[in-house]
Length: 73
Image 1 (cartoon, helix red, strand yellow):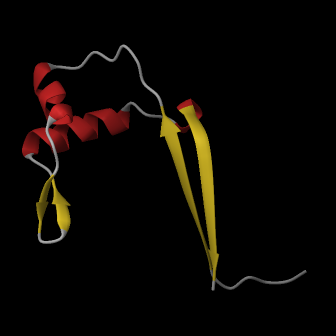
Image 2 (cartoon, rainbow, N blue to C red; image 1 turned 45 degrees about the horizontal axis):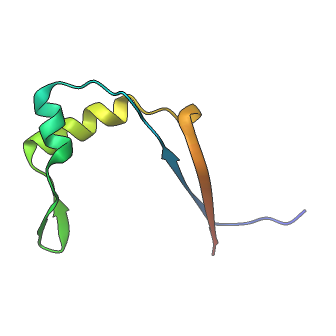
C-alpha cells in the first residue's frame, strides 16, 4: 500500500430540469444576466434568491454527465 498525503477530487455534473414552476421574482432572477465587477461575478438580490431556491431543489441523484478531476500533490 502507498499513502497519498494530499489529494483533491473535483466532481462536476449536469442536472437537466423541465417543467419547473417558480414564482415570478425567481423567474426574473434566473433570467437576469451576470454583471462583472472587480474580476468576479456579481449577482443581483433577485439572482441570489433565485439560485438559492434552484440549488435547494437539485439533488445528486438527478445528475448526468459526471466529470471527475483528480489533483495529487
